[in-house]
Image (cartoon, rainbow, N blue to C red; front, side, top):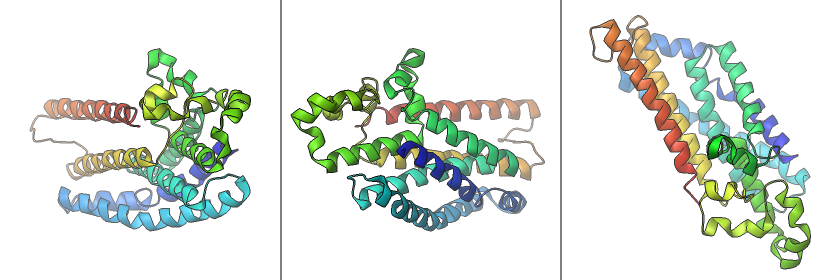
Length: 278
């Protein structure tokens, strides 16, 4: 139920998130890029992103007031709000990338598809340990890149912490099987005290003790969005060709491909580094 609610939240918010850099705003940004410097384009992105925090705050408040009373969770309202705000901060960053890179119709479809993919990689079915151990252990990257996975893990973790009796020896003995089959073993709740996120998620310990990783993932998505904005605006200002300081079209294309490859590997590296946190 919690996972489905988070997926519906992501589906609704991907529409709102793409208004800041997609559609007409994207066309305006491309025209302005022809008359302004890259630093001005960067400051424009920062200003719009800061302005979006107000809407993210309001959306997180609505999520809290809707989800918290009916979910029967032991988590406090502040816990639910923290998780909701961090989840939306991360989700909006990803949709900034889509809105900048693709046309409005394609970006909207990609946003909807990404919400479903994030839900599929949330670790419910198949469980987190099954996904983590897939592809020779690299399947954990799918979990680490899923905002719904992080949000769901934090909500369940707060429910167990605030519940009090979940971690009693008797409850662990009698009810751990129910949690373990969903990837949240009560007997391994303290796994993060000794191991990393990646190590624990591979052994049915899908807990997440804070929302810091979601904010880091959201910051990574915003960095990629900035790079996409600078690349596309620079290419638009030069007639569709990204010069990169080269007079030769062939050399500029090689440099462009190298830059894209570097950003792809940098993204994978940063997502992998999230798995080394606690």
